[in-house]
Image 1 (cartoon, rainbow, N blue to C red):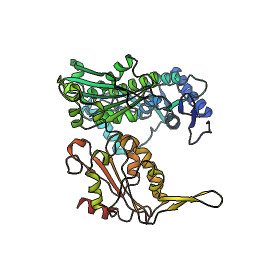
Image 2: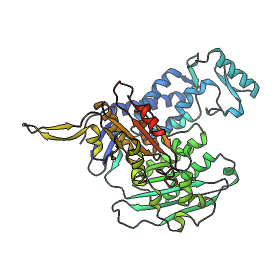
Image 3: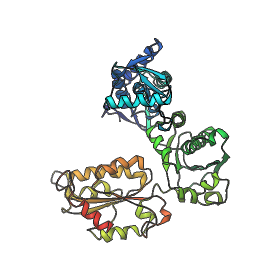
Length: 485
């Protein structure tokens, strides 16, 4: 199936590949023209570029690269150049840390080195004169050194005369890998194990582990850098063996910054940004589907990789525990904790409430209780009575799909209430949808009778009342008060 473009992207179903996405030929040509235009201007020797034109072209690039997320990090040169006129940047365009004050500022549209006291005074004066300033008075902004390199990288990725297909849901995955990576103050460690994707009953691959100590250079870096660098090195070593070709890799970390930077595709830190670039190149080169997942430090300890980073090889998977027992992406909250459902029933207005199954997300969750064919053979749904309540407890790996259905259901049946309970795993994939329909939400830390400590991550719960007076729910605060006591 090859439908026309929808919302800027074209989706194809290719028999030997699977579900693929690409942009339109018109947008692909415009993308290449923009890259060529700015490359030529820089090669002409220009030191400043039109700020307004850069903003316009960046908006288009951000839009098109949604179909090609591997290109997103190479937009950083545009971001830095657009902000370079502000002056509180180093020579490469990166924002200066506040603890270093400002060692360089924009003075009369020129970025020059001055002492710290003078830099701070100039920066504060400019903010005081016009705190709402959004663009340079001259309309021009200096070029950062990396913009040309980013343009060359984008040019290399757009050499194809036609927009390339990007596989988003392949027909075949050779294997799925699960890995945990952790870095301590002095050392680092990781554990990785592969599982054949063609059969759930097939034996798992051998467990690979890495143990090492940081050199003097890395030891002085921030903990965020060491955590992310360890993940990058783990992926690079696995890729060198060929095990990541046409594979899906779930890589767990107890560092939330690493997860956030990976899903954003960039970082305000130059060193973290370079590490993300290395991961993106690996994805493009090996056809790899990579997920970086933030988990609790206590899960990392129980799994054994925390000890591995400290040279202790007698914990968790290192002594034979099952790797999959520490991977809870495919199990719902009520499946993991049998006491959770009775707790929800104790305060829910519908005491007999049961969690919706994945099939129920598309019918029961929408207020459809069945249906029959009319005399013309057309199926007509039967709707449930008003005022019903549904419980959504999707596994984290499928939470985005469930929440999309929930948001549709709320608009179709404004007289129905909903309750959501999802463990905080793979949150960047579904967090925005989770907060879209907020009446009130709360987080339950591990350690209660219904969500014990071996759940590791918090449970996010959200009671959604009826939309009796849009856009506000009718009973959200009352439900929250009954839950929280």
